[in-house]
Length: 294
Length: 233
Image (tube, rainbow over all chains, first blue to last red; front, side, top):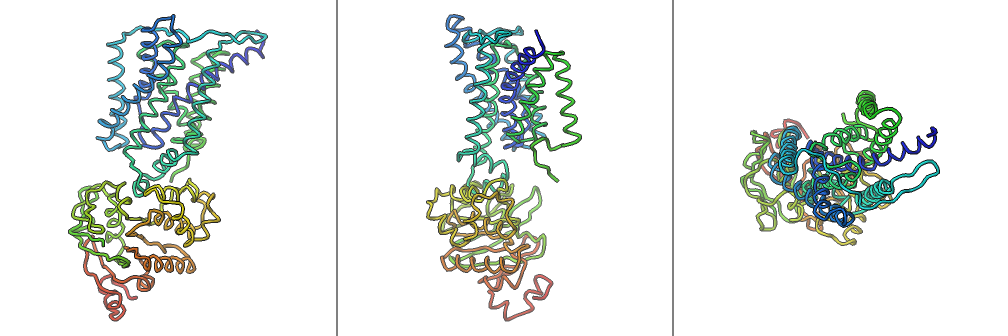
């Protein structure tokens, strides 16, 4: 294949990566931005989303792949969101959201979820059929219609999130809580309730991203580590707590990851991402869109 | 109207507000004076239930609000203008006011009457609050608190770092609120400014209330200020 078409193919792969990564990183970013909690178990919420998608697909069978997928799209974020609500209520709230303590606690949640899935789901990777098959035919190659659907779905969800954050009362409450927790309370905002919903929403984004990607990647009990690492990279490059930064960085990292993986190797792509984080930490520690604090 | 009985508050293990008894009548302005670190700001913070732990009884309009959680305190009718303004600096003026209006689901005419007190804010509604001048930020902090239609307003050093014309405007607003029956608990460093608006002065030191005297007594006896604050008027 010539360079031009190969670059187009690599860019499309990069966009799929960016779409899923931006959803996963958005969840982590919201949790950190509003609550100042570094959620190390975020990758496990992602993994759980994929496992629920496999479970829904395997119950209904390949004949009803679309129905199974639609059920998973609804059910996975709901179940994972409820689990996150319980984690917030019984773990994070008990620790008064102390940053150091919550890191240790979320590591604990990570292992509990991971090992529970290992015991119940098993160690093998399980494929999930795409809900539909169609190819977009370019003059040089054909491309999966499902992958384009993933990009489109991510754009819709990100646009909806932007609308909620920028234009609605819910967004205003979240931003006020993020900016000054005490003053938010002094103006009637129940921050514990806000924290609970934000933590659940963060986990739901991860689960949704996993349902979108699982027909391409398979479900596996260890699949949470990579998106967690990539999300941290994205959130650090974008600026801790900056939603705009997280989305821009996700597109940047996702595209570079996709393109470098296609032209060279996935290992080199990860090395470049890690190098980017190191450069940002040295030259712009607050990230691309973060606010410098004294 | 508002009272504190045996009121204490803690930062970790240390008690920074100690057994305070204080009353504020409707439409009365009580000023809290004390040296730096005396516990004035901590006391206001504790009234808003923003300290990790507090004890004693807080009553507003004969209702015990001691057990209310922090986000219910403003709903009970206490507005807070903190030291350093603490606006939601990345939000616009309008959004800051909207947050104030959310507390009691206040109607738009409340916003109208608040903006009448601070007309300059009408021209700044779409400006990001962090980019306002110091005086405008102070006006916004007061306007935001007034949006909840408070029965009691806690003002923490509202004239800090402001030019004289702004100080005069804030004094005027305090007088207007007084005539509307809003009670005010004012923390202020400028003794001169205090005497122009306050009805009583409460002196505190190391978190303890030393004495409460009327402004007329302070005006008559120059030694009172010196005795409690170690400075002359």
